[in-house]
Length: 491
Image 1 (cartoon, one colour):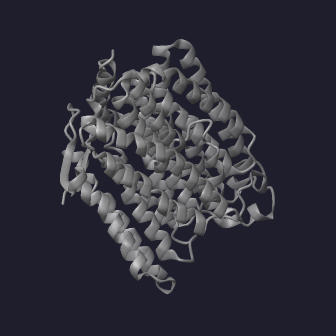
Image 2 (image 1 turned 30 degrees about the horizontal axis):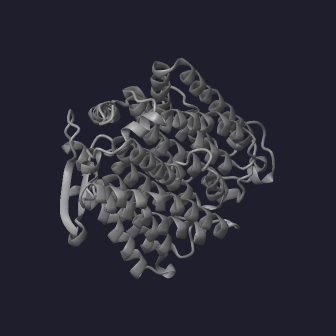
Image 3 (image 1 turned 60 degrees about the horizontal axis):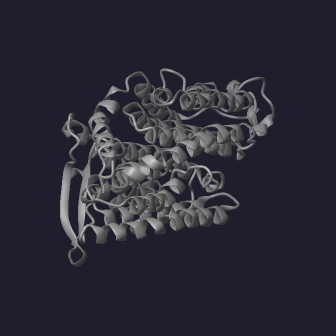
C-alpha cells in the first residue's frame, strides 16, 4: 500500500474500529484509540515531504488500480504542489481536534471520535484523487460524518443547522456530477482528470462547465452570496466540528477551482474572472463589516472565515504567480489560524457555556496563560507580520496590485476590517477588569489545553516566520497551471 493510501485509510480504519467496538463505559480507552489512530495518520504523511521532488509539476506518489472496470473508473491517487500540503495539514488538525475534544464530549464518544477519523481520511482522499468519479465520491462522502457531528453533538438548533449544511452543499454538487458525466463522454469514456485538462472544449461547453463547478465549489468555500449556511452551522456545531469545518472542509471548494474549473475550462475562467474577483471583494469587504456587528464569538469568526477565504478566490482569479501561490498559502494559514480561533472559543465555552461576547470581560485576570495564546491567534487573524495570517494575504495583495492597482487597494482594506473586528472582540472578552462572577471563577488552561494551544501557536509562528517550505513545494505546479490557462485551446 502506498503512502497516500495509508494517509487516507489509516484514520478511516481506526474510525470504523471505534464505531464497532467502542462504548461509553469504555470512553477512556476509546479516546486513546482515537488519539493513536490520529497520530499514526499524521506520522504516515511525514515521509511525503522527504520524498517530494521540487522543480517538477508532475504528480508524485502516484497509485493506480482498476476500481469499476466497466466504466473505466480507477482508484487513482497522486499529489502535486497544489495539493501536497493539505494532506499533512488535515492529519495535523485531526490530532488537535481529538486532543481538544478529550473532556468536552461525554456521550457517544466512540461515534464522535470515529466520525472525525473517518472524515479526516475522506478529506485527504479529496486532495489526492486523480480520477473524477473517485474525487466526487470522496467529496460527497465528507458530508455524512460532518452532518452527524453537527446533528448529534451540536447546539439547540443542531438539526436545522445540519440540514442546512447538507442541503446547500449537496444541491451544489449535483451540477458538478452532471459536468463530470459530460467530461466522461467528451473524453471517450475516461474519468482521468489529467486527460480532461487537455480536452478541446468549445467556449459554450467551457462556460457551462465553469458554472457547474462553480455551483459546487462556491458553496463549499463559501463565497458570497452562498455563504449564509456557514454562520448557522458554526454556531450550532461542537467546537471540534467548527475547527475541522473552518480549517479543512472549506478548502475542498477552493481546491476544486484549481483542479477542475481553471485547467478544464481555462477560457471561461479568464472570461468570468471579473465576476469571481467581484464576489471575492464583496466577501472581503462587506462580510468583514458584517463580522464587526456580531455578538456571538463563533458567528464573528465564521464571518471572518468567509472574508479570509475571499482572499483565496481573489488570488486564484487574478492569474499571476503571486496571487495563486498567495491563495494557496492563505488556505494553509487559515487552516491553522481559524482552527485555533474556534478552539480558543471552545476553551471559554467549556467553562462558561456561553459564546456571547457580553458574557465575558477581563478574562486576562483569571486566565493569563490562555490569554497569551488567544492574543497570538487574534494577531494572526488580523494578518500581523510574523504570523501565518500575514503571508498569504500579503502575497495576494501584491499579486492583485500587480494585476490592477484598484483591486489590490480594495483587497488591502480587509487588513483594516480584520484588525477592527478581531481586536474589538479581543478587547471586550479578554481585557479590562473582571466583568462578572463567571469570569471571576474561571481557571486557567490545563496541561491538555496548553498542549493544543502550543501546537497551534508553533504552527502559526513557524509558517509566519519561515514560509519557504510551503512556497517551494507549490511554485512549479502554480507556474504550470498558469501556463496551461494562458495557452488554452481557444486563446
